[in-house]
Image: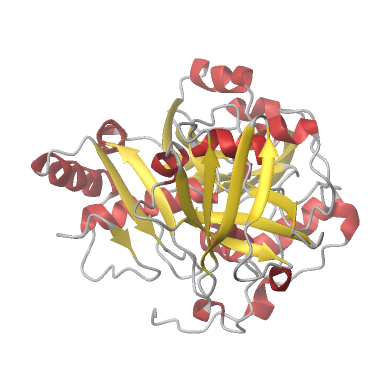
Length: 394
């Protein structure tokens, strides 16, 4: 626990009437953009974001791909049950490996109407010529085992047949065909998220090309977003909230790029920022390469981002690693020292959330006036809403 051991939940509440919440997506790239600097704010179109970036910026995107993690079925008694995949629970915890697995897999899940699924009952599915069985592997741990035939089909194909895109829980409607496209970034590559890295939903291939033509650079990381991103904070002291753990993967080439980069560093979304800050800690630590805890120690570490990335690259080369996979539970809060962020591209977040606390780490209490101005200007909030470009408070 950090020395500033109390951050009241009440300090991160604000009124968010339903009329501000985006329940439907706009056409990609058509959203609005609020630009915040210490001197004030301006309003723009997201399509013009390349004009708002400082010279020589490096934008870091999360290329994780959302999987159809929501499975709706019925018991033998005809009672509806929903299985929401959270993360692999078998011998491998890497979603990419498990999604390519044949014959059977085990996942930790959230189960809707759990009491109606008896401990000894097998749920049966038949879709697209695939026969699937789901049964409890460990009911206490909410672990479900899936088996299917033909056994040589990868689990990713099984999910495509029986699963749906997992829209955020506050969007109480059926998934539409358009959601399959618009709740996925255009650069999504590595399957494993059960929620979209929503700051990236605004980008089109044309906008990305404009950014590069204006002399900015882009780079990609992977953080598989877990359902914990929607977990409400119930602790009055937000620092007592247990942060969820998520898996990050980056290449050595990416680490080397960060070590060379001298200009502004701008993560696209809170997940990309958590990756960058986690990497700083892994580089600054003399030994650790596999895990970043909720409150990593920064005692006597004064490395710049470039210096820390040089150290991390050296550690990876010593171990002959072309890529790095690690778990992170890092919490970014007011009082946390940011090492890897000059500005942040992000949507407008829920009241009382750890994501809002992260925004406050970047721009301080100005988040309150920014959010009020966004409401006054009728911006659309949350996952399918409008965007903001927030420059670090001076």
